[in-house]
Image (cartoon, rainbow, N blue to C red; front, side, top):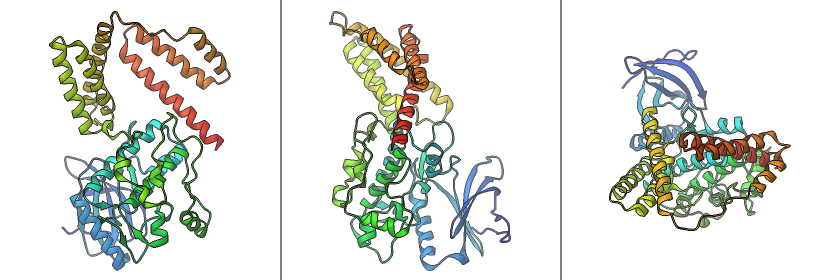
Length: 421
């Protein structure tokens, strides 16, 4: 399909779209925001590539990117909607991500909370697993090439497949491809590529999300090369994970042999089995149906077990639903199953010895210790309110308070860790 371009001083003219703003520019391309003409008013991003600026290599990369994007369909990979061209430009019409890129997101927040890092890492791992199953290696994973949707619960999407290749095993390249700061040591030292290169990049991105900076940040190109090529292990701050579980920074292990896709995808911190996804939602629904059936048949202990198991999938699936209506319906079901599980718990535990409650003096001691810090005191008061709401049976309000105070406490601890680094 042919398009007509405006002069070099203004934005291009792309049939069926109105250009509404400029999002960014690179060596070979400028990206614009646009709205589709007609009824749908779909908002898109249009990557406009100047033909005259393309070298033979960059032209080959662009064609590979188009061919590859046409075959990819995943919720955490930017979708290619269409592509058009004219005498001067090639236009890639892409899915629009209003949250901009991950680098900007990290800079605005400095350090990300553990819960948010886990959610982003789950999404990145889901996309990487999809690519790995198709023998696709991105080769240029970095925060600038990871885009975010808008809203309170942004979703991550991998973009820019210009350097991507189909690779099953090691390959030698005549030239270095990718961004040096996130490039695996074997590429820098030996120009050797493999699917494990992407795992290294993910490890560096994870480090930057957790600690607010990349591990090899340097003032000079030579110093950066020296740090990447060094045999020393990546230096990690003492606190690796707030919940006490080791985060998968082993993805950034120097020897490629120590990076394993199966181990990464199966890591307990990532917990892909409970990652917000269509599969997670379906598992939760299936388990809930089994719980209801057992409940109806009077199998109370089995019903209680299945309700609890279903909730471990349905609660994270709230982050998967985009539709406000479907999300509200799912939330109602979750509260319904939580209430039923609590009732069944009281039924099946009758006659069993109860656990002793936490001594009130310990709680008072904690409040006394935290008095100087008003932020922590506010979160502890919300925990008290949560316990009160829970005792009254106000499960919806209790859940909202619990999520809020957990997020606040995690942010406070994360801010403290960043401040003392």
